[in-house]
Length: 288
Length: 334
Image (cartoon, rainbow over all chains, first blue to last red; front, side, top):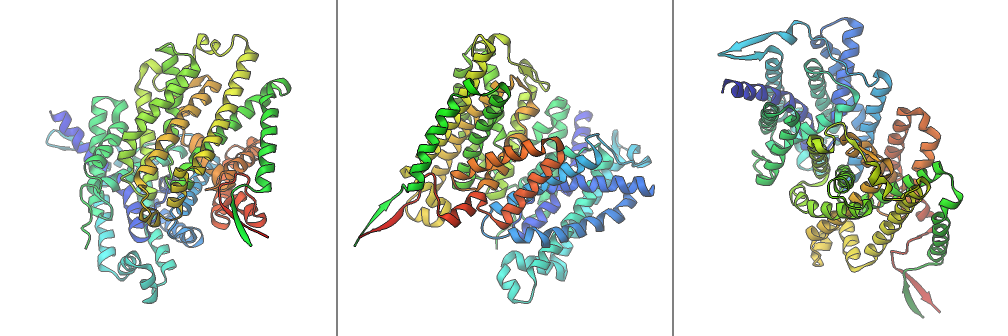
């Protein structure tokens, strides 16, 4: 029994990481209805940027965030204004295919620079440290990841509903043309949204890199996890996304408990079940 | 002065004749081409088929899937399973795989059609991942490391190596012809007209009484079946299958998308041009591996941004050409 409880606790904490994968995806979909197929590859790119920073400067991955986050945010802004803004419109094909092309480019560029060897970020003591919670041993890093996920989502929620930047996000999300008439530059607002999304991606990438080894090919899988968390939780609801990540994480660790081969499969099946029973997700945003 | 409405043009009639001549020449390839060339041409036909099918889904039905590798791999695995365990002839097994894929695609469609636009795309990818992980669990088919087609099964395609290779070549050529002809005839039919209407405006189409969901479902099921058959043929050429190769998103979806986008999405000529360009580019850049893929991604992005109708779209705009007569033209008669 305690083993199963342990698996569930691990799953909940893993869900925090998935919620971080999903938060950026959810944010840009909310603001500009864009689904970024390259999202997973950007997470892996951030992990590699973290690797280069830790190796070159000899700093802890957490400190590397101070460099990787602004870099990713800048990349996001440039990408949005330089390329992705041109794809937005009524037709869904251009954004989909352009981000798909981007995904292939990032993946192969990483392969070219870093080879296919699996790498890992050296987390030091925090990697192996653990706490004993009433018979269940919990790693400090997963616990920290979950805490960061909650903080990031609370932060995004705050930005979205309490700041003028967030007001801009909500305005372009509701009606781009009227927002533009009210003096908002939507190209700039979209750029800022992508910058914020990729700053979150930087956090997700660094935490992923400390938790497991990574290689250039695993981006697609991370995109899928993030996407599943978004859909399970319900589109447009950030706290729902956290819940979706947790459900996905728990399904995976329970699946792994039955047979290691079932870990990922169990997550996908949980997603398909939710899609069959509650196509709008478990906690869809109430339409006003 | 009266007017006539025609579909065919001089260009389309010339293209038809040239196409038939080319078909006869290509069908005779076992007598004039080397083994390596035949293999390459077989691969081209199969990619052309995949591209036509993906184009029908994405370019006409608006179903942008990044998960067609689910059916490619499924068809491949059915070839292995049905020949090894049910003792079927490879060709029969491939066709049966197509039927099974059609049956399987109906419940899958009812589930993933709930997702819209780009979310549909990622949903199809999840389904493909479920296929990959599930087949990796089947130990009888080699689990995660895969298996080879037994020699006895391979011999059913022809006792001698030359005969086998010729048969595999003709199967690939035949499949491409059947796919191209089916898509063409489908688009010219009443249903094709409905599909074109949906492509141009879903709202208007539904206002005219077209059942959008049903039309899309039909397209999804038919393309899935054909894609599985092509998958069977692909792995009949390869003779070896593993979950990672069978359900590869790069090989069976990324390349196919690039082919269609570069050639021209939403046209029948596009996938043909795209396939030829893709293989030409591959022959030139193949030695560069990852660089080649980056160039391909970059070309696709530039085409999507600067010329969303692809190479064929540019040609068509400039010369008003149409090799497959699908649209109607009004001509004045003196």
